[in-house]
Image 1 (tube, rainbow, N blue to C red):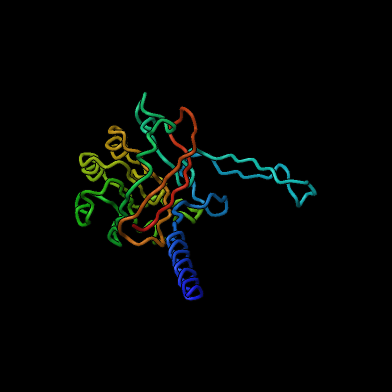
Image 2 (cartoon, rainbow, N blue to C red):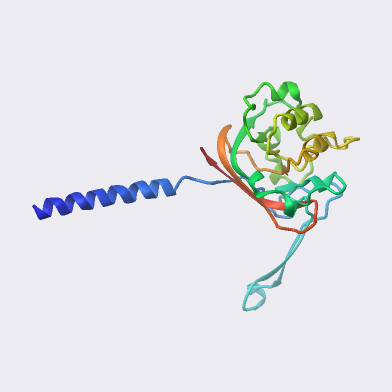
Length: 237
């Protein structure tokens, strides 16, 4: 009797371990754009990217030691209210709860060059607390193209106002700005930031399917500034 019982217990333990392993291997998807001077686009007027080894094994040094120089709006980054609102919340003071939780990836129309109210309402966005827009920017791989594309798909002020009025906690886009290039007024930013809604720009969503996910976005804790680079990841709900 002892041997069958031992085998049964061993089988149960194996099944439990397999279940635990399966649960632990739910894939997180990195939606952060790589920070690489060879591939990363830079918004005109932003600081260039300089990544240098101060100490390098290739030079005979006994360790690696690097120096980074880049703008706050490099790659995947968070815009805090201070970006366009005098006296607004700095990036280190935005509540972390805004950056962690359920999110919905919306796959915009393939030919959409603007996400206006009409385009937004083609999709199931209502009720989502965090919304990430996947557009032709991602399909074209523009976050790994060093050439800056002025005709990127952006969010129009009327859509931004709908999102703000609906009480969303966060809005993300897949290029370096949520605003139309050379827009005379930052109305899209203001519609969101004036309500305390952080904007995540420069997401890499090329291989991400639409739907509901768990989202984690962690901007660097840079004190008193308007923006910071961030690491962003998704896991399918």
